[in-house]
Amino acid sequence: MAYDEGLAERIREVVAEEPGVTEKKMFGGLAFLASGNMFCGILKDELMVRVGPDGHEAALARPHARIMDFTGRPMKGFLVVGTAGFERDEDLESWVRGCLDFVRTLPAK
Image 1 (tube, rainbow, N blue to C red):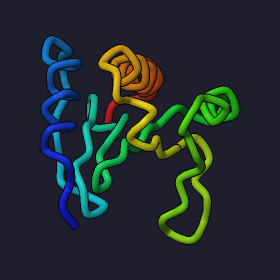
Image 2: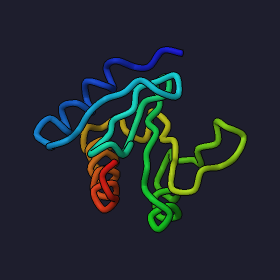
Image 3: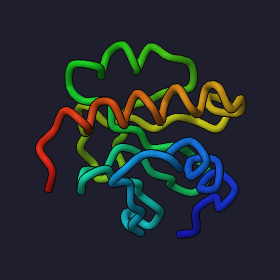
Image 4: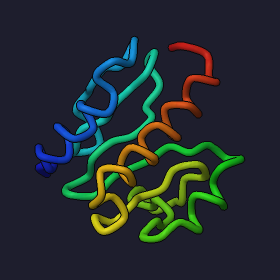
């Protein structure tokens, strides 16, 4: 399964100055990690976001966000955002920075 390389570049621009951010191919796409914790990723042309259990409902209420369920079981704290939800750079940056802020609260792996 391929992923949108243009979206990957846009995410790289958002996190370019962030320490400890790495990339890893996983889930058939590309994941971005901070201190070993995944904070967002790309599945085909959609954005996978990790908002955490406490931020789940508020993030789900945002336009074009839906529950992540590619394993057959919904994953609380993880969502998928359709392409219309991050067309604008400001929207993509809001998603990515919010996810990064969440995983920075987790212990490093």
